[in-house]
Image (cartoon, rainbow, N blue to C red; front, side):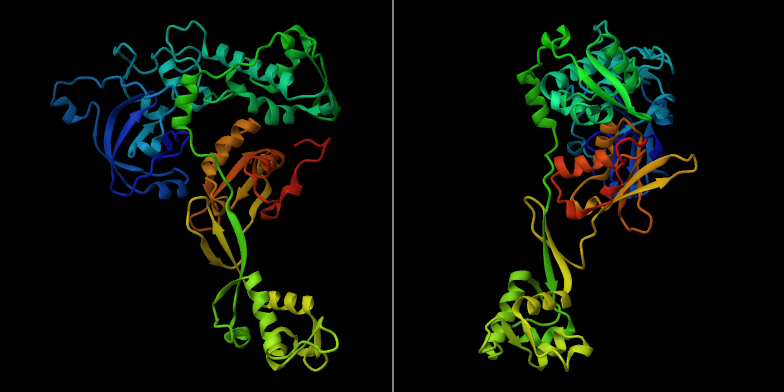
Amino acid sequence: MLPGIVVPPAGLPQVQKGDLCAIVLVGNRAPVAIGVAAMSTSEMLTSGLKGRGFSVLHTYEDHLWRSGDKSSPPFIAPLTLDPPDVSEEKGSVQAGPALQDDMKRLTLEGKEEENGEDQQMCGEKTLPEASEDPGVRGLNPNPADSKTLQEQMDELLQQCFLHALKCRIKKTDLPLLTSTFLGSHVFSCCPEGRQLDIKKSSYKKLSKFLQQMQQEQIIQVKELSKGVESIVAVDWKHPRITSFVIPEPSPTSQTIQEGSREQPYHPPDIKPLYCVPASMSLLFQESGHKKGSILEGGEVRMIIINYAKKNDLVDADNKNLVHLDPILCDCILEKSEQHTVMKLPWDSLLTRCLEKLQPAYQVTFPGQEPIVKKGKICPIDITLAQRASNKKVTVVRNLEAYGLDPCTVAATLQQRCQASTTVAPAPGAKDSLQVQIQGNQVHHLGRLLLEEYQLPRKHIQGLEKAPKPGKKK
């Protein structure tokens, strides 16, 4: 069942309906079941990961297994410390905790352990499992390490905190909203291949961690407006800041990360185009175009200029005016103007002509052939909604039109905002997904789309819904 599937950071592997798939547990590449995909990857995402995803043919401890030597699955470690690129391992699907709890598990030594007794302390995952968990990716997976995952996350949080203060924050940046400090500065200091998650630290909340740093007199935090805290002072001479050494990534880890990292996002080139309607076909037929022809703005201007010159429509006394012949009158004038407007300036003539043409656009993604579509490209739509619990959620739609994977955007926002996210089919839209983030996260979303993804502001609507300074989200 799809709700039991763990979606890796790189997304689900691309499978088609009927493909033979291996089902594995998190932290172990040895299959525990074999099945046939009941739907394609795109259909799984469209369903919101609900329903039956695979028809199981054979599982560990079934009748076929009992007819053999009844051996246990081996432990096959991940290929690297980072989660493998699942796109290269087509048909390998990781099962979630629900399935894991119904089966025997294997430790690194290969010994069987019954349900719930797999080296878990206070609900923490075992290190082999943790090495595959995106929330603790990059933490030391060595079972001999005496530090717990919580202690390692505490160290990572403090490292990113000191790194941000030493290298990214200046006195002129103060006062600085604590949410901005976290989303724009602390997370960006997290080393490649690791993921900071405050909820997995002993502090659980940013406010509790900053309170501890204030007690150590590293920073000073004040509530400048009701419910909104800001960092108002930093002691850059504090020994913990002055003695902090910025960690350098090891060449080995860099090589691993470069091999497994997805290609960085590059925004598409979006060019407005114009489609010739039937009502303007006479104006464009002299230039060899007909109804439905797609033209660029520069081509339209040149065609109109050549038409006016070829038909001697340029005013002899004022070269800035163009006489309107019957074809131009029918194409660009309103009915009420056809007996009153005899001439138009060049700029007015060209503007009216472009307005009468039907809109179209061309999208070109890096390394791909241009895609031409009629109509206007839908902007990325950001809205706020109120749920039954009276809590606000941020909803973003139309990411796919700009080559953005909703699941990737959701995972990034979950880390930046430290808020829960969900991906579900967009109501009323075919084969489109929407991302929902808890709280008003328009500010974080705007920074991600505008600054990191470099998308033009004109293609994003709803940025004005960001919370005003001094207001609670």
